[in-house]
Length: 379
Image (cartoon, rainbow, N blue to C red):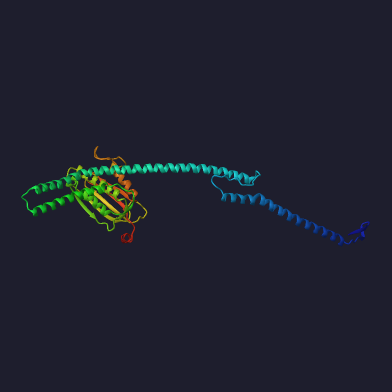
């Protein structure tokens, strides 16, 4: 340390003092080392204590929550064991407990609702089956009236041959011929009754691969016997190269019978002879959907009857809707047919013009097979 010496207005010299600082530096270094050691020890202790407290307050409660969640049974409470403090985790466990109680109550309500829906669905299915069966009985009843007339002819022939067999002046050859003809007529009656029984056979409700053409032919064999067909020319062109679909055969027969009856009734209302065309073909889609569907078989029923008024066309598939005179129809035929075809994955489309006739267009998805895919790709 130094300072100037001033005499008057002039600096005449300076005075200085020199002190050694090694001792002070040594003291300061010892103090610094002590402070550094204290800081390290204090930081280590505080860090370990902080980790312990964090583990106690955060990690262990979270681990207990996780273990409790994994071992949770629906009938138990979710409270975390060992949690005595009223902290955030105990609040969380109680909140979870309340939430689980609400979920459990909601599950019970959901189970009750599901049970109720299952029972309602069973009742609805039973009612639907009853409607289908009732409509089938109505259709078979109408067919039976025509078949009874058709059976009358062979019965009369059988009775005539039996009268001839009673005569004593006929030869053995004539007796054999009369017996053979009688047997043929009885077989004819048996075939007619068997076909009617096939149509009236109850449905088992199972969808399985069936032939559309074979089913149509079964129905046509019975329908051709109806008196109403006497003035109707029936043109059948079963051109579909593939005709196997997955459906209920008994229900599909019911749809075909309904279409044929409606067409014959429409022609009969004109009061003159008419024509009924039945065709099948393989197509790609129904023309009313944007997405590309798989291969389908199209069955068309086209008549030249009275037709359906345009204002009624969009209602024909509604239950109990009918344009026929009272007592001529139940109004369930097309509704039941629509329900059956929809259940088989198909569609029904109707086009009509008053005075010119009606076309019922029915589409069913074909049963997928290598042959079906080959036909579809070829188109």
